[in-house]
Length: 175
Image (cartoon, rainbow, N blue to C red; front, side, top):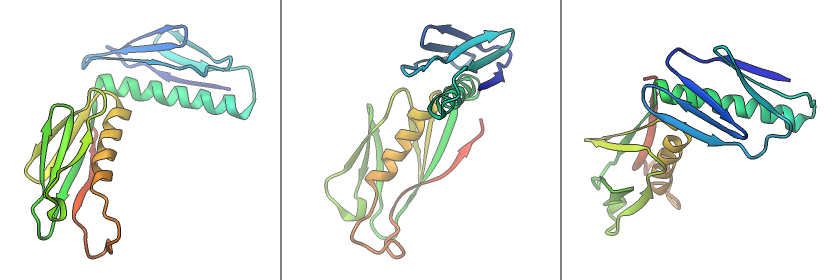
């Protein structure tokens, strides 16, 4: 089982044991993979090759997973990730503020106490009117931050067809 992909120009990939470090024009990312299961990660010329001699299903899955993470790291340091969200309300105007590494969603369905979500890792959150823009190099940090904002605005015990207030994911920018 072998997966490989081309490393674009201007991107430096270093492999030390179970750690892969990718550096590019926007910054650098480092990730340690603890579950290597006899998996070889090597860099030849301008290609990154992830392979294993073992044909077990779990090992094949791990080869694909490591390759996907490495591709995401390369895209992150070259283009970055941008997720967009939209604030939707019908009666009570929702206020969203960023304070340090927290996002405060106030006046949600008329609640007096703001709901709080954490900003994960190095993701950056920007509120522009009714839009929230989340950017960063690490796809997982950006996605998890977006997901936590969406989850704190989840409505229970109401009909979602009628009460559609909340903050929703609207799309991803391709940088």
